[in-house]
Image (cartoon, chains in turn brown, orange):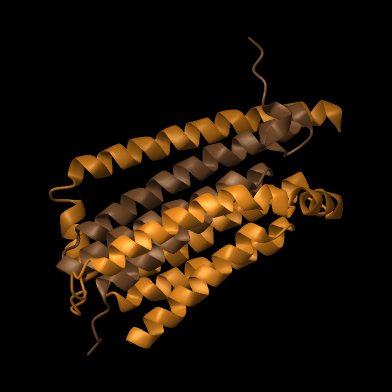
Length: 103
Length: 170
């Protein structure tokens, strides 16, 4: 049978992945990479949920991953449509071309 | 099995770091898909076969294919990769990487200090997940379906505008 995995190791992997995604969101200026890093962060949160669910032997962690996945799919669909609109309006994917509001 | 978990965790972290440091969008996508597959292996080892299948089919399959389509539509070429390479200097990196590193060290400190034990080995079968989804979480499933409908309508609306305006321009 499967040997048990230390819960700290699973949560640590989730934390490292989350921080990598956070670095990507903060550093990158191409909006495609920002969206990709957001996806990394969401996936890391889901991993933490699944590790916790496995720790308690309950299905709730997997249920929460299901909801996170649904949210990520909706977010990606709208976000990528906005990327297409951004390309059309500004001709670039650099987030710094749209750092001003027209008030 | 525990070695499989550690190896796939290392692969996931390495592939994610490579994905967020690439200048070419397609290379980054391929690395991220590799990271998602490694996460799927971790889920399987943790006794969650349902989400292991879900992450491969939905996340690595559907969402990443959407990304690839958008990259193809935008036609992100070598000049964009060159621009990214210029923007991605150490001066851009150092501040956010330092802050995230501090956050990661804090999290690692807390998690290593906390002796919670190990995850239970028994597998939580897909049947249990389905029973939970359509039992206590029924309202959540309804809300998720409404969220997906809103996402569908939003993407349709925004994408329609993009297609219309491209026709006279092209």
